[in-house]
Every structure is written in structure tokens, then in C-alpha cells.
Amino acid sequence: MALLNFLGAIQHVTGSCYLIESRDGAKVLLECGMRQGRREEDEGNRGPFAFDPLSLDAVVVSHAHIDHTGLLPKLAAAGYRGPIYATDATCELMELMLLDSAYIQEKDAEWENRWRARAGKPPLSPLYTTADAEQALSQRRPVSYGELCEVAKGVHVTFHDAGHILGSAIVELHVHDHGLTRRLVFSGDLGNTCSPLMRDPSILTQADVVLLESTYGDRDHRCSEDTLDELADILQQAHRDGGNVLIPSFSVGRTQDLIYYLGRFYQEGRLPQQAVFLDSPMAIRANAIYSRFQDQFSPEDREAFQGRGKKRIEDWLPILRSTLTPDESMAINRIKSGAIIIAGSGMCTGGRIVHHFKHNLWRNDCHVVFPGFQAKGTLGRNIVDGAQSVKIFHQNVVVNAKVHTLGGFSAHAGQSQLIDWVRHFEHHPPLYLVHGELEKMQALQVALRQQLNWIATIPEPGEQIAL
Ligand code: ZN
Image (cartoon, rainbow, N blue to C red; front, top):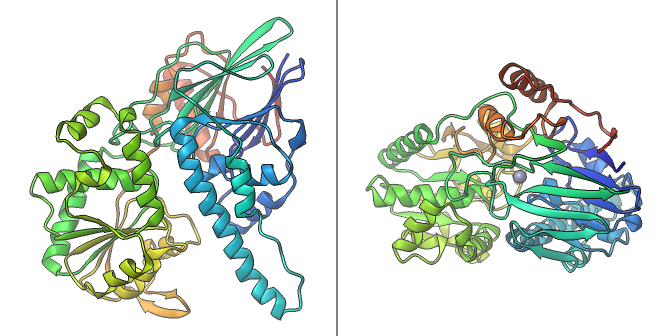
């Protein structure tokens, strides 16, 4: 029988990685994600792979997020030269994500090596380089949704829309081994059916083994209409206060949703601000990719979008100004009121948002809106947790701005949505929970047992099962 190895994102939300081996000798890596968050994760990324990279026949990735693709350049650096299969849109977004990630790795190593040199320590090499990312990108093989593709001898893959971000996929693998075919379905990251632009996750009914993500296995999200009303109220209040509104946002997915929502406010006359700046080169490039793949939007949003003669994401919001160059970005610093500034990074660990904090955070009339999760130890989390002042570029900046957290914009399915998706599988095949913190998985495990009488397994890191 073929074997499935649980290598990454096991009782954890980042670092997705699974290995499928058939007795006929095929080896397929499903996901090659980077671990993110604390320092120990960084060390985990630096360790050797749990398999021989040269022994792989193919790599398959569900979507472009770094926690699913971020170690592909390291795999290339370790000598892997085989194909990397993903949907067309994922292949394009991966270019943005991996080149950006390589740039960050190089800059981090450069920074670290400065103090190492002063301390008389030998220099560190970056986790990987731009050249490694370019090598991995040259190995991409785009596949359309629904297409059946043989990725290795006896292993076929089909991507189905997961509705999480553009190009995101549920991965269905057929593994043919010694005359027996087994069907493995990996949910990937499942989208939130309340979020705009993306379609609902595809429903599948047949599988011999199912891997289900459990990021929000313990709870449901607030309805997005409530969150939208809250955002509209914040924008009105900011207008009355007379300051700017800062929104730290992830470049891919969250930013496009925000532009869509602000566009709706604009059409409805609920947007009092005069200008919205998108101050993120990566988000601006992601917008271009989203615009090119608008046939993959949900039918209603596509109709609303194209019906009004709109060709690009930016057309949705006529007062949106995309600032690509550093000069354009710095010019925003002169604006003291009436602007909404969307910038990365999403958790404020770097990027242009930090500069806007420096210029606005100390102002009483400024509002900061966090539309996404802020991990422990990040500047964003410190502000959300109510820090009186924060260190920005070695200076203390007092936090006088009003800080808001919006919980309803998640791109992940909540507990009920996960259960609704998985309930369609006939005959309750073996179900494994992955991509979630242990408590969240346990909560989902209980809910699955109570609602569907289905006993799900929480695998241990490194565990191997027969398919
Ligand atoms: Zn994701």
C-alpha cells in the first residue's frame, strides 16, 4: 500500500508538508511550506528536509501562501529539479511571494551578519537566495482546475477550487499502487463562504482518506455584514476626528477584499474619505494578477465587476491611488488628514506600514484598523494589546491613535463551514485533522463526533499511515 507521511503543519498552522510514497516507487511531496512565527520556527526552516530532495518525482502545492510554498527555493537549493505543480493563478502569485521571501531572507542575513561581524562571529548564509527562488519558479507547471494530470508514475492530481485566495485549491490525488487505486483528498486552506470575490469551496463526495485543515476548528466567524458596518462606522468617526486611517494588510487576498469593500462603500455614498492609498508594491502586483484572473471570481462578483465595464481591481474604487515608488510613498507623509492608507506588512513586522506608523501613530486623530490576525511578538500585536508606546526605527513612538480590530475578514472557513464541507464525503472515510493548533483541532474533533458521529484523527508530527 502507498504511504502518507505527516511532515509539517501537524498540530500547527504553518509549514505545510506531506509526503506520499507508493510501493511502485513514486514519491510526491504535497506542499513545501515555511514555518512562521517564533524563532524556533526559523531554526526548523534551517534544518534538513525529512526526505531526500533528489528522490522526489514531483511537488504539488495547494496555493501560493508562504506557509504552503515558502521552502520551495530551499528545495531547489538542495538540488531538486523536478516539476512543481499548481493552478495557473497560484503559479503567478508564487512568483511574487517567493521573490519577496528570498529578498527578506537576504536582507535578514545581511542585517544579522553586521552584528555577527562586530561580535567576531562567522557570517550566516541566508535561508535561500533570489537565485534559488528563480530556480524553483522555473520548475513550475501550471494546471487548470478540474484537469486530471499525471504528476508521477501512477499518481494523478486534480485541483478543485478551495475559495481561499486566488488560485487556491483542494487537492485530489489518485495513487495507483500494485493494482489498487486510493483516493486522497487534501482540503488545502478552505475559504470563508462569507468573504467576497472567491467562489465557495468545491464540494467533493468520494475519498479513501481526507485531510482537513482546522485553522478555525474551534469557532465561527462573525458575519461579514456586521464587520462591514463596524468598518463603515470607524471610517465615519475617523472623518469626524479629521485624521488618517491606517490599515496594515496582507498583500494577497485581504487587500483585494478591502478594495472591494471600500469600493462598495464608495458606490453607496458611505465612504467619507477623499483618498485611499494602496502603498504596497506587492499588493499592487497582486492586484494585476487578480485582475487577469477575474474569470475565477464568484459569478455574482464577476458580473458586478465586469457589468460596470471594470477591467482592473483598482477600477472598483475610483479614489484608489497605487503608490509604487518610494518617492510616491514618502509623499503620503505630507498628508495629515482624510486619507486611508493600506500598506504591508500584514503584521507590521516590516514594510511601508511601519513608516506610516511613525508619522501617524502619535496623533490623537489617527485611527488604525487591523483587519487580520496579529501573531505574538509582532509590532501589530503590541499595538492591538494596548501598548502605550512602541519602538519604531529605534525611536519611541507614543500610541495616541485609536486602535480597532476587525475579526470578520478571515479568508478561512470557520468551524461550521469546515463541517459543512466535509459532511459531503460518503461513508465517512478516515479523516485526519491538519493545519491547526492542537486545542482548535480538539474542538473540531468533538464537534465532528457530536454532529456527524465521525471520529477524526489528530496525527503526530512525523507519523506515517498506509493509504
Ligand atoms: Zn493560506
